[in-house]
Image (cartoon, rainbow, N blue to C red; front, side):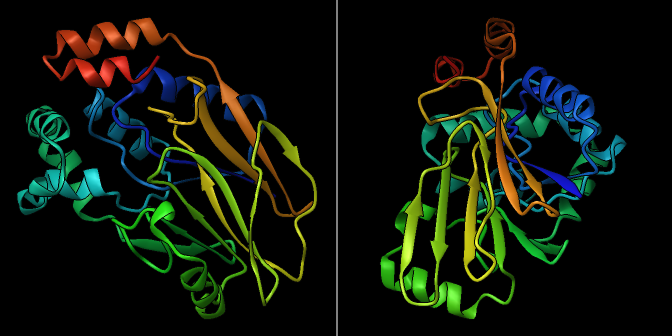
Length: 242
């Protein structure tokens, strides 16, 4: 079975559509979304509708939570907060209800899926974690693999029972994870990558081969930039796409 794990679409419908087409072309068996469908981008309503139409299981991200609970808006920097305030006005009540129904984590395919950090943190960033905390997390984690988003970067952390190891996660197929190790996989971002490459990113997990494949998907960035500016969203979020 091959599972596509997507994250951090951030209202970027153009990038999301290209990723969905890539997924369809590869005849992927299932898709899971790690949250932050909204914020920054110009088409949050359309993104939520696509997620619902395709019945994609989705956990809640910190931007998703902020549009349904304004108490969390103060957590964001001024530009992100302005974007979220605008995003709220762009979402239908049906989409807001869909977001309200999201859980902070999912366990499916014998693996864990969460936006920030296992077991169920929406806010915690991977780069905040110490080596001792990694060890504790892995020892407490019942599942062998946990997929996360939130940082918009590609990262792979492995644990052999004693030592946690940062392993390069790059474009292409990483063959054969170790059966006797646990992993945290940071799958990058569809809508606003921050890893030095502006293609949309997602990861395919082949459960039979026990391998990961990182996909880089080009899309029309200029078109999204124009939509962000036309929507009256902060220009900085358009500039970040390049």
